[in-house]
Image (cartoon, rainbow, N blue to C red; front, side, top):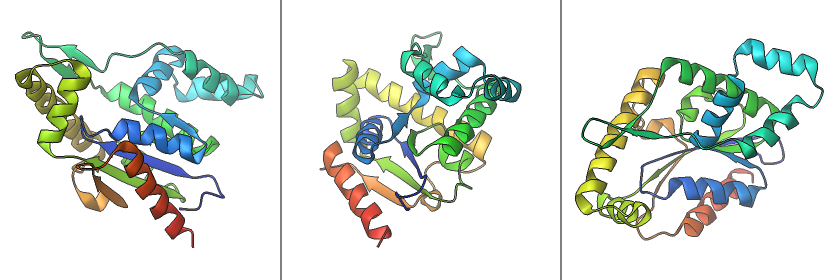
Length: 214
């Protein structure tokens, strides 16, 4: 990946691995925007982002992309989970959401360098000519500890959340991308976070990027 040209980094991650934080810190280090599910869903809710909507914005406003980026910073958070009948969170997905987010992701990648976390971006944007696809993983023990600490859950509740989210994300990826999110052939770099801090992971990714540019 060449950081002197418009580039794209996609970060797929397991819940509790710290992958979202790694993506955010990596974007800061690279000096580009960071996009994740909450922000993308905020855009979908705010703009509905049909192809017609995008074209209208382009035609109407010279600074249409600036307006969108300003709006995303103020977009309300979108719920990532909803409780099932037992009160256990489950993943929310839909065909319409995937289509809308795919259009948004392509627009983002066409306009600017960025880091995108999740949302099957590794598949949606696989044709991007200058990209780095990363998978962030961790052992179940490490994931459990992080989820319990970050969400204030019991061990049993944390296990339920991880199981639900893992299944939901895998089903989502297989449904829309036709591949497993765990297939390492989908990625350029796979990191196991056990024994690493988020800053350690960013350092390793930056070393990989710098080496690839030589």
